[in-house]
Image (cartoon, rainbow, N blue to C red; front, side, top):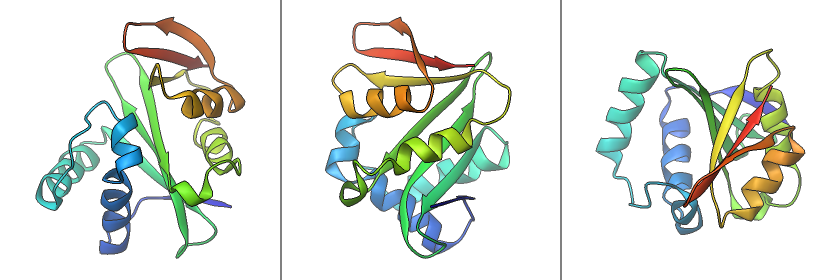
Length: 143
């Protein structure tokens, strides 16, 4: 499996948008609305240009993508989020991608909905630990 930086190409842009708009991904996102291409492009332009976010795509090679990991620089925290195509679930690809994306000596956080057990397991396997519990979500931390 490879982990590579997102490139501002139509192939990568479309992959991110299509995966993000899958119903099973939307359901586990904090923003559950479908995203149109115009808003997606604006969001990418704003966040990548300002170095607020780094996106990594993981897959078999440069042409066969499994999912993505995004790293968002917050004020005091670095947050990760991820998604994977359903057909590649339960193969440890996301765990492996998270480990590679968090290999620097920094503190990383993941905000996960309470009912998203699969992502909680992935985060724990990647070295995250439970940090805080809220009404709708939990926060995990990796040092």
